[in-house]
Length: 405
Image 1: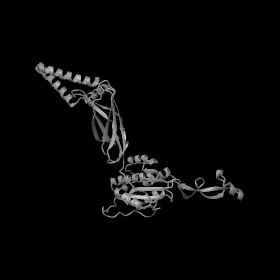
Image 2: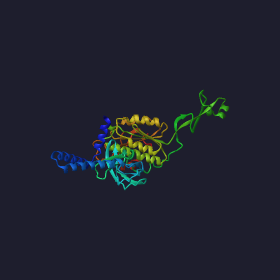
Image 3: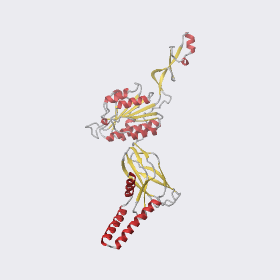
Image 4: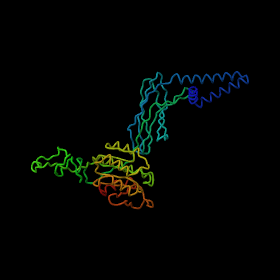
């Protein structure tokens, strides 16, 4: 019983308004002709039925088999910048497809924010056609493009059939970024690492000799000194910290006066990440559950997925410290309402000799646009203020990465 009902529902949904008009006219003509005995109306009813039948047969018998592929070029864009995609369409059927109108829906979550239409030329059998599609400018996030589909109709437009030609492609819309000349004037990252105050049994920077203790690795025995002293001595080293920067973005919704202040925080974090990559640093990015490491593309894509939530900044910092235990620098971006103790807790998740840079976005309640920004907090958790994206290069140029230790 369900199968006939499904087929009936599929058929009725394929009827266009013009088809319902012709069908209704046929039914009225049949009833009136039979009641009134009008042969002309009965003939009209038969003609309406034949037209509907022939149109349906033309739609079903010559379906037209089309293969299509949608390729995003590139697979990412920046907020406020249109994206581009390449649509390749090949007619695998035996008949030509006449000027199909292709729909390209763009979704943010489950909502279709825009539906583009592209009219293709006549698709001859076995011929491939390429069409460039311009996607609308969107806000930061992961945007779903597709599925690309087309609506086929019979020559009279009485029936229609919607077919999806492609799957769904994810377009990463990255935060707006601003160029930064340098993160630290005169500072050159040491790609071999810098010695810390912690002592290690295996590293690059030699520290001192000490007497052998059972369990020490014999590979570190200094044989010449041991022979001179008559007692085994082993080498000790300074623990070397690599030029690895951790960027933690606070996603706690209570830290930001406005939602756009969170967007500004992500723009700041990604701008800093791009510049640090250009200067040769290794990166780890954490914003709640969204993390990225090493490649700048992975970090930027992680920033596309970030959303406001209840996650605690300190927990994000602990996640980052586990991901990058040998990091040498920490950058924290939060809102002006982020509690100082949370920032301090974030700082405490890392070793004391890890350099710290804190940046706070938004305006403090009661602060006007023209008031000069005042830094938040003091000591090792001091946060520099950035109220607009244009202020970021100046704020960074006036500070040296590592102040506030």
